[in-house]
Length: 127
Length: 329
Image (cartoon, rainbow over all chains, first blue to last red; front, side, top):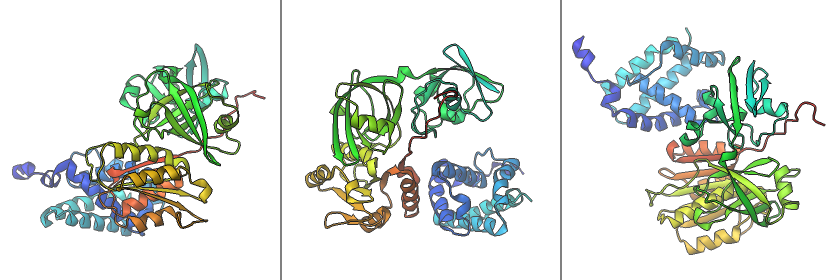
């Protein structure tokens, strides 16, 4: 337990906030280019949308995040009524993996991030 | 019900009603234009009471700390009370110095201010007539030029543009409030390619930004794309061609949807941009003008590799229809 508690988060290991800022551009571009899910990410206010995604990336990399499971549910509920399902969730995870790989994040760290992201599945899909 | 106090009178607000709509409905004159939280014409100051954060989005810290807020998007919580005052303190008297037609539909308006007016080329101001009529316009001038230059599109039936075009006289006194907006040149990376694109009077801020960059010693290429539906919608072509002749790094590309010629490309603005700048990775860009064009171009440029932090967009919103006070004729 103690060793785990002292292990640095992926967020810290890949460079913290500046790394998130770089990752957002890559990740946002991928989801916006994917016709399966782009409609969930269309937003007149691109800065606001980018800020949401940065919060998401910060959370799944174990960084300082205020996101709770409850927020996750409430935030995605309108999307679920618009048809958000497993396929869409998998597509986002796929882009998350590709983003991290593109930024040369080592494979074991990618696996940890994807595990955290996978853990949000029930909350995101309001199951 | 929330209540708003203005000049020692209380005004009740209906549910979901903004401070601006409530005051206008009950006959209080408050300058306003876009009514969408963007142009900042309706700035007011809270003397007491809680201001929702949504009514302070985009305001400079100096304005926030003094209690300023945007009345058009301020919906106080039911049961609360707010005491407000106008933003007269932020207004600077301005004298009308010249009116020049730049094209059939664009009027150049130059103003002088009694006190120095601090701004960055590319920002926008609210122009207020003496009776409180307000409209938001971008600045085409550079601070060192002294006069403030605005490019006013002549809107059929437009209250401010119609007045400027036919009734206003040199020497008339108006007021300017501002500046606002984040569309301006920041020095520091002189070699970075710059992409400026706009439609209609979206050229005004771009004209300021391009000249500001050149005068700041920018060495990287500067691309200016100006789009219009027809050649009649283009203006300042001679000035921009002359600027391009003097600066080898400055490229001016006018484009129209129909009626192109040897000197004016024909096609959609994003297609023209893609032809000249196929891979804008690492560019800094400013997009100004019609909001549909600005939003669609921003997305396209982001997808083609521009970083969000290097994308500055200023979507021009039309002024919203007037709300007549209850009982008005």
